[in-house]
Image (tube, helix red, strand yellow):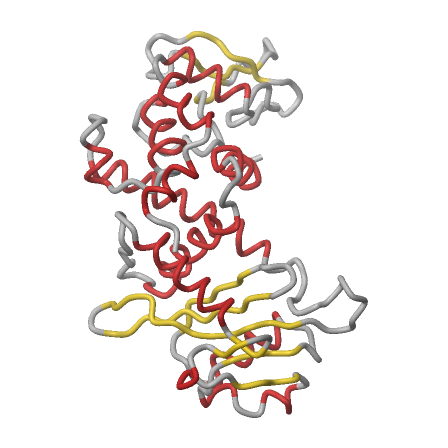
Length: 312
């Protein structure tokens, strides 16, 4: 088990330390955002659609800049933040950069952030919520990249996956479960917030995301019975014997649960939406899966790529 301290230190890469320096002034923040293409540089005019828009100074605006059409017969203007991640936020760009690329990457709590920033908790929470949505959409798109359980390393036709379900949290007295599929070869983990652990809920997910003929290891949960009839090679690992030994084990998925819960629940906790708690849980799990997938990499760079995927 990786300690909390080691986990935080593993994410504090060189660029993370520079975020506070980057956000020291509005000019340096804007330049950094433009350098990383997180705001439009020369977008096509939204009105005349024939000319590019360029930046002009506007001291009446918080960002001191606006976009204006180059067409003298148009001269339409847009906010500097137009169509970017930052468009709907009232916080200064300096605060937003710190929250997004410093505090969010470190997985800090609202309480911790408000010790260092003047922003209100609600405003910070809105940034975090939007980041979860952006990352979740990105992770959902990755799930469409093919099925798991395809063995390529040894020329075999089918590979091996482990499946399991875990209780992630409670909401209004109800248990909130997550179902997971772990590919032993690629180490890819796909997680799904589910209404319940019934066969009707889990089997369709397995059939959609695991290639027919793959070897599946699971515990003895009744929903997994008769997976052979669905075209899989199925081995049950009984929990009374631990999580198995040798190749007949579910240690892979169990280890993923331990890591995912720590990443997802630490400091911030899970705050589910009253409107759609299941979708809300899926966002938290997707962010935790993204953090796990990106562990050891430059998370700031990874987050930049995710934001650009959604906005540009």
